[in-house]
Structure formats: C-alpha cells, structure tokens
Amino acid sequence: MIIPELGRTLASRDWQPVIAEMLQAENILLTTHENSDGDGLGSEIALAMALKSLGKNVLIYNPTEVPANYRFLKDFYDIRVFRDRDEEAIQDICMSDLLVVLDANLHDRTGNLWPHIGFARELGKLRIVCIDHHLEPEDFADVMVCEKYASSTGELVCDLINELSARNGRELFTPDSASALYAAIMTDTGSFRFPKTTPYVYRLAGQLVEKGANPEMVYDRIYNSLSPEAIKLLGLSLASIRFLDNGLISWLFISREMLEQTGSKLFDTDIIIRYLLSVPTVRVAVLLVEMQDGRAKVSFRSRGKIPVNQLAKQYGGGGHINAAGCLLQMSAEKAQKVIFEEVRRFTREQVDAQESPLFDRHI
Ligand SMILES: [Mn+2]
Image (cartoon, rainbow, N blue to C red):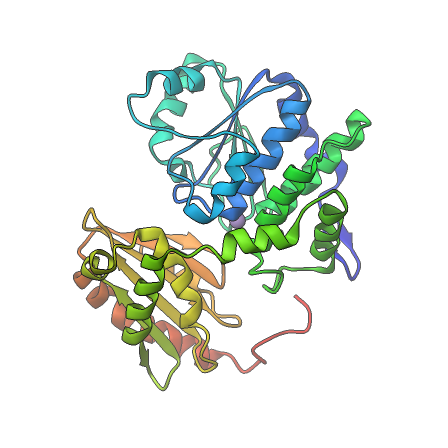
C-alpha cells in the first residue's frame, strides 16, 4: 500500500498470515541475527512484550551476546544467549510452536541456533515466521514478510503491533516497548537520515513518543556509551585510515594487535566505520577487521547510489545498498590483497557510470 507523499506500509491483510501463526502458537521463540544490532534487539523486545500481553509464552534466544550499548533493553525483557549444549535452551527450542526470526532473511544468520531449529522442525511442530527488510531473502520460513521498502525491521514490527492492537481492541504498546522500537528505528535509519526514512517513518517515531518512548534516554544509552578501550581504538584507527584514488575510497584495517593493544573488542569497531564516510569526497568506505578466529570481517559503506551490497555479495555476504558486509575465510592480510583491486575497480566503474546527482529529493 502506497501512501502518497508519506511512504509505504503493508495492508492489514498482508499481516494476516503472520498474525494467524502468532495466535495459533502457545510457545513462541524470537531470535535475530548474529552480532545483533539495535534493530534486531529492539524489534524482539517490543514484539515479545506485545505477544506476552496476549497471553503467549515468549522467549528470546539470540546466537550472540547483546552489545554493551544495547544492554539497557534487557531491563525490558529477558534476552538469553544460546550456548551449544545448553540442555534447557535446546528443550525450550524443541517445545516451541513458533519461531520468529527478526531482521535476518537467511537461515544461517541465526548462527548456532539453526541446527536445533532444524531438529525441532523435524520433530514436526515448529513453524517459522520471518520479518525483515534486507534484500534478496532466502525462502526458509513458512511465512516471510521481507519488505525492502522498510527503513528497519522495527518499522514493520511497529505496524504489526498496531495491527495486533487494533484486532484485540486494546493498546499493546507500553512505554518500554515503544522505547525499544524507537531504538530499532533510530539505529537503522542512522538517527532518521538514511534514504528510506520516509515521512511515514517520522510519523511512526512520533507515535512511539506519544506511547511513551523516551528518545533522550535511548539516544544517550546507545550513542554515548563508549568504553575507554573503544575510544583508544578509535584514536589508533583514525590515525591509520588511508584515502585512495583521490579520496574516493577510504580504507581501514584493524588488526588483532590493535584490538589487543587497546583492550577493545570486535563490537568496538562498529562505531569507527561512520568516520570513514565523514570526508565528503569518499564514495566507498571499507573496514577490515582481523577476528580472533583468523577470519576477516569486512564492512562496506557508500554514499549515494553505489550498491556496495553487490560488492559484498561477490564474497558471500550481503546487506543494503549503502551498508553491506561479508566474512572472509582467510587471514585479514590476504583478505586485504584479495579485495583491494576489486574495490577500486568497482568504485571507479560506479562513479563513472553515474551522472545523476548524489542525492535524490525523493526515493
Ligand atoms: Mn535492520
């Protein structure tokens, strides 16, 4: 459904298959992708609270730990980390009637949960719903709502909870769940400035504030939460950013040594990427991080219409037009060599092909 000048939203009937699954289920499990972010976590929390108030048993199990700046969300609802051989967790999965995968559209994004989900499905009763907004979904669920127009999974979950509220004739939002969804939408829209932030999204944010979301608290917890270690890593990183091809590309390699020297963690690298695009000439930014297991985590960002998800896809990854990533099964040093020329070629080709202005008035 297109709302002229406002953006898009799903029609009530589009939510019907999702709602039917939810109402049928008694025990519901929610999860999101590995290395969870504000969108996945905020969506989980708000949906868990809404389903709980409809009388469902709702558990959240994630494949990885909640990053420090999102831990305040755990005050709203219990978020568990799934660990291999955790008998209680495995039993919880097997006892579930419905799994809702949020903010991920590939089965392997659920990490170490997947083998157990597969087993529970073999037992016969576990159904899967996927709610997401990434490109190129894999058809792994019984019901998929994967809408790439959406700014965030939080936007979709907001619509879903409004729909559930309307059908039940009562408000299913609380101030806490409104704050959780506000966090989801705020983080995935880059604080309401990325291209998919339609007028509709601003309206939703306004609605969430009306329902008690606290923007000041949410922003402060998420963005003013750096550890001294992360600040030190930021310092080291800023000093080693390279600018290539007349400043079209910014390039940063964070070695394991840099992480160890500063005492910082993998998730401390997340904030650094935004500095890579803060120089106006830069069209493509690349961040390579050497992980503890020897693999290389590569993040791509771009400005304007350069689809870095195409770049990531070449290496088995994916993402959005302006933000994508991949994991390379090789040393970071080798990874740098492998992608270096390809990134330069891709960027040159994209920049040459584009005569249109960097930014459109409308999307
Ligand atoms: Mn998202």
